[in-house]
Image 1 (cartoon, rainbow, N blue to C red):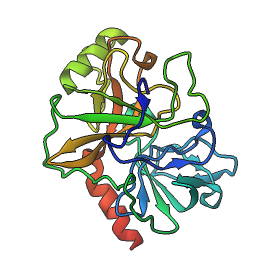
Image 2: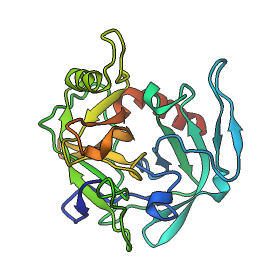
Image 3: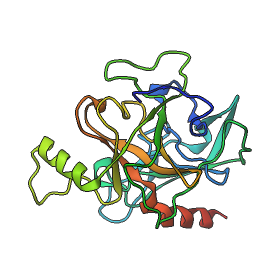
Image 4: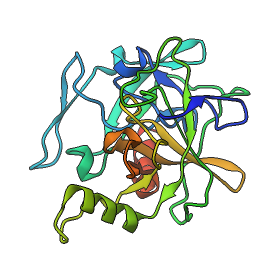
Length: 250
């Protein structure tokens, strides 16, 4: 993101998939209950394993979980299962998230804590303190350089209707077309937002003294070089599905 190196006073650290930042296949946003990750659906991996969706939805190919590793502090964490939302087709159509089940539990540390899922009834506003973290480009033409330190930037949430109208105007979309799906939210401002390599990363907000994961980086235009916010999957819209899938796995 268009941010700076993380510090101890900011949101808890996150876990990342092994690999150089811009080559990450599954950027990890959420480490809830010490056992689950919440990125957005991965691209095609080297080991193609089709996941078939309901009639009329295209299959998505996933990497073999046995060959996906997450950075966790100084060690590597194994992934035992990848679950993509069954309604996912393409990012701009919504349902842009997946769950990663870790093979073993991850203990909390002084600088790494699990963020929580947002209660479905909790209201978030542009006045809330929200932060985006990631290993993506620091500007449109500037990749993150070694040693690839985690970047962070404080960004505002954007009113959904204002975001919809802004994108319609920019894209010259017809009045009857919906650009921002209902299960998505907007956040960011000129010079402050995600860029290439941040996809799947977490947007967390402080609420009632705790850090809550509000969004997952999905898509946008121009790496915050124009006056349009980025678009995130709204975690709040999918809490019921997330909890249901976790219960299924026991």
